[in-house]
Image (cartoon, one colour):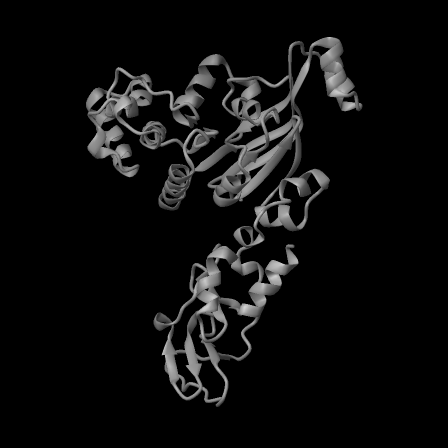
Length: 377
């Protein structure tokens, strides 16, 4: 998959910056000692990452890990001391202030933790603000902003002021303002962390729904591992300005690069991270039949039937005969093991797992579920 954003050996020091200080850190100098002796704080240290087009890429770490500093380097609000940030093939290092402004106006939008709404403007006017800055005529920007509000479920609140809305609704306005620009890249800095847990989950659901409707590249900053696992296609774990590891939640859990990564995942519910395609097994009895061919009669066993392109067609249950796939419980790729438990537990036979094209990847039994969860303990 093509990289939308490339980060290569990026460093950022606050307090004082020089090639000499970066070289000292690169050679193993203690950042805490450097801060005490020289007043220099190493916010980001030698980070390299590739963000793929169309993914939700979560940068996760505790307070002070450097994640928000890294995000602000992606749109040029902060310049690295060393290293390079490239967006859509263009290096930010070589851009003028005007070019950076154009990048933020047309290629990126940002959603903040603090909502950043104008209290004296209506919800609609807030949603249209970015378009106003971009110079879009009033009628066109109002129409576009209303469409964005409809997408986040706030069209009925368009004439209200932000103070009349709940915290979750205010964050939806911030998201609508970003969506109105229709940017290919969306930067979200702790966007849901100020919300209570239920509203936060609703906003995560909304983001996933919007992504399913229209894929864009999302870089999402979070300090919450459960949130990162739930929404992230991949997760970059940061600590003390350094990148610990970057991968899918499943690989971070099962193949941690070091003890620091293990500690991040120490209390994670394995069933919420593991997805069904990771634990599928071949069906115990498989028959391949094209449409119109006679169905087999094995007698005494359940047969899983596909066509020659592996598209699942249905089952032949002993004593009951043919059961079309429309009447069978199935699981889709990407479904968590936790979400699959009820389906598998209430099924008379191992449950088929299908890809997006309805091809049979394998089956999952109750025993397989238990083995998978025990393996993560």
